[in-house]
Every structure is written in C-alpha cells, then in structure tokens.
Amino acid sequence: MMINKGINRAESGAERALPNVMVLFEHLSDDDGKAAKYGGSGAAEGGAVAEHAGKAEHAVMAGDVGKAEHAVMAGDVGKAEHAVMAGDVGKAEHAVMAGDVGKAEHAVMAGNAGEAGGMLVPFAFEETLCRDIGAGLAPPALHLWSHPAGVALGLRDSKLPRADEAMAGLERRGFRTAVRHSGGAAVPLDAGIVNVALVLPKTPGKLDFHDDFRLLASLIQEAVAVSHPQAAALIQAGEITGSYCPGDFDLAIGGRKFCGIAQRRQSSAYFVHAFVVVSGSGQERGELIRGFYETASGGDESLSYPRVRPETIAALSELGGPALAAVFASGIRQAISGRGVQLKPAALLKEETGYDLQYADQRVLEAARVLRERYSR
Image (cartoon, rainbow, N blue to C red; front, side, top):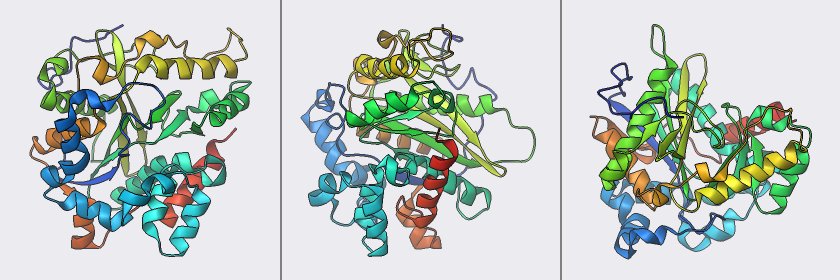
C-alpha cells in the first residue's frame, strides 16, 4: 500500500540538506547483468550506452580520476579481475600481507563468508568509514557498491528454526550469505543491484530519521530522472506488501518495488543505505528470497517473517528505467552534484589529506570479523 503520491523535493520540506563536500567511494562490479543469476541483461540500454558506461563513464563523469582511483586501488584489474573475484578473504589477507592490495580488494568483494565475513566487508567498510567521519578524520561520504551474488539477512531471519539449512542451500547454489547489522530482512545482492549509502556526521539538535529516508529517496528519483525522466515521475514511496524487506520507504513504480531503504546510527555519525534493483528479473529475485523463507521457517505459519510474493518485485529496467547499473550510478553522482555538492573521488582525497580506506584494510577486515561473530546465530 502506498503512503504518499510521490517523493518530490517540494513535498518533503523537512528534507535534510547535503554537505558542501562529499568523498566518493566506489566498489561496483563490471559484470552488470552477467553476474546476476536472475536473467535479463544490461544490453537493453544499447551498445553505445553500454560502451560509455562500461569503458568511459569514470573518465567522462570524474575527469579521469575514476580510472586513476581504480588503478591505484586495484592495479591491472582488466585481465585478472574475474579470476581474483573467485578468491576468498583468506587469500585477500595474504595478498595484503604481500603488499598486493589490488588483488585483495577484489578478492574481499566476493570473499568466503565462512573465512572472515567476506559478504560483510561492504557493511564493515561503511561501519569503519562512519566511525572515521564521526571522529572528523574524513568528510561526509557517498558509497556505491555491488556484490557478485549473495543474500544479506536480517537478524530475525537468522533466528528462524531452519535458517542454517536455508543459508547452506543458498551457499551451495553460489550465493554468499551473511547477517547484516543495519536492520531489515533478507535481500539479494548481485551485480545488477546498486547499493547506495550516504555516510554523514551527526549535527547538533534533534534528528528525524524520516528526513534522511526522504533525502535518499529523492536522490534516487533524481538519479533515475537523469536518463529516464518519465519513469522517475512515476516513482512512489510506501510499503509494498508482499515484497522482501518491506518498509515505509519502499520505492516502487506501478506497485512493484525496486528499492528499499535502511539506516544505521553510531554515536557521532550515521549512514542511510538503499539497495536499488537496476537490471535482471525482479520476480526471480523474489522467488529466491521466498524460497529461503519457506525453508528457514520449516513451514510454520505462526512465525513472523515476510510473506514474499515475487510479482511485487521488479528491476528498474523492467519498469521503464535505466537497464545498466553503471547508468544508474552515474545518475546518482549527477543528482548529488546537481545539489551543489563537490563530489571528491577517494583517490583525490588521499592525495590531498592522506586519508585512505579500502576493503582490504586490516581495520575493515577486523570489523567484518566482529560483525560476523556478533550477528551469527
């Protein structure tokens, strides 16, 4: 059921303003559509757009800094990325010790959840970044990331009577699993899903978390509007009954959800996070999560868990929106820059201040280990 007509900025007068400067961290897969196990293809955008998004987007949108950043972070990714992505966190830690940060970065993105919480590394990265921002060590940040194939569970999901069996079944099918700390329920992760996080310091005075949900919701609408304004005009916010991880700020077109929003707060900073389903089949993702709950619940209808109806889920590409994760990510960057924010790539921040945070950093890997132990069954 929708709770409002739309999410334009005029309607959300209390919407929080963005900082003047934000640092951009990106950990997006290049396998848009292919790494997802849900059908569909980013190629629907057309070869010219795909070429722009896959090869030239960083150069065009960030003045070549994006290419420099990836070179600094990962070295020669083009030839070895897919082989390294099959690695695990153990290999990543070994690579760090050997000084090969590039391989460690990509190994840890798809790391073995059983080794050191590889699935939790993006969440651990944001937890670490949030602490640094709260301590004044880094400016507010935008984090864009994807994961090749996984399912992130909510804490209550992990307490279902046969959750271990359901998680093991997903692992056998090639989906990494982990319990996340930011609330909500089970969601799939893959290369066709862009995760968007705003990591911000707390300001004096009372904070209304609804303002932050509205802020991110409106940015997502503006991002879609960059390439597909007609689809953006149809986006509405409100809980979609039957979707996975339902919430008041589900974003949908025509009653079919493509985005959910959650939040995590620390003492001096916080982040608001959205998963945006861009390419592939929404229904097949819904079927994956419904299957998890059917196994994890043991068929006990008295238990509390989302009753997923796969037809309530869709990708933006199925709703008249962008069909490439890279195109949507470009839209997010433009939407934020369009509000007068200087979006500074992480590599440039490192040059200017020396601040550097990567997935393969020992602080991040340790945070992932702690999260895994704290939120495991």
